[in-house]
Length: 229
Image 1: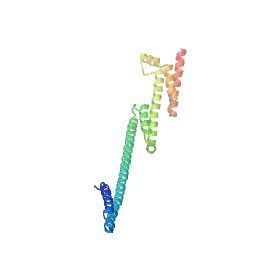
Image 2: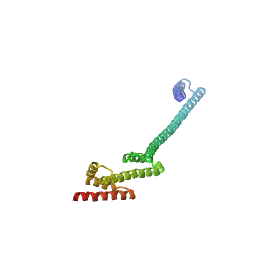
Image 3: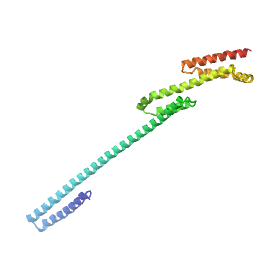
């Protein structure tokens, strides 16, 4: 109702002004020289003019109120959106940290139990989850991440060292029967040697690398001797 009040007053004032002008015009011809009538109509004119001005001011005030309400509503909406976006970011970060932590703990359990499932694929998953973290959480979990990298590399180095040891053992399987011994010796080839030699050169642990290369050196000597015979 307050919204329409200024417009209603303006309408009434304009209608009254038109009526007043008509009456003044009428008075001019019918009541010439009548100062009393003229003063009355003049007073009414002033009143209607004040009503028009007041209506305009009310309209301006009402407009200002609507603008203020709109600005206030906009500020409230903006704060709400900002709070909601902040909450979403916090939830997303919490989920990323939770996934990384779960993967880290799983890989750590595998390493502690000395299981063979700790592979490059596990490390790729952990690396992807680690890189998804923002800068600050990355710094917080960097030590754990680097430790897992070392653990994975240790497992890889151990597997290669064991493979080199097995290849060397196949050159002289003293515990096997003659038939098994012959079969194992036939499985020792330059292809297996070269494949393991390439892997052994990538071993990070100096001790394991030296041990693996020593095994392969003996295998190479045995292969060369077999070829000469």
